[in-house]
Image (cartoon, rainbow, N blue to C red):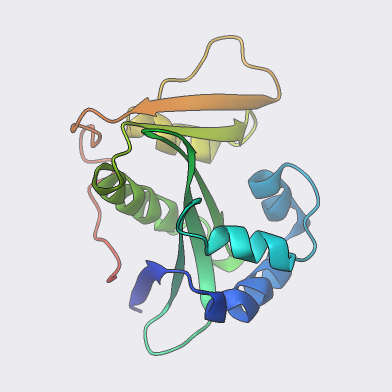
Length: 168
């Protein structure tokens, strides 16, 4: 099954809202750190505003059902926060690795030198994924771990992120 990853547009709003509706409360909480039953027009506008960053949607080739979205949201000059939301049925299939690699490839072209991410300390899969990509995990973290990932051109440690990429 081929997946396509491309920048989100305002026309994707309903498909992204439908993907959110298919996600479990736990998946939404892991992404937004609180309840997010429906994305407001304001949040959709943020995701589609190139001055604020870039959001990608991933969908099945030939269709419009969004199964994941990934964000690189500008925080400061040269710094962006990355985040993912993957529909529950697509979790555990390696899509997170693909999306992370995609964002790492996109970041330098956006003049990003450091990525940040916030992850629950109990989200071991995401922490392992970011660590494999070279993220710096702080010691003595609380419930939420704030990661830093300086981009040094050598983000792919070993073959842990060496997987195919979706078309874009």
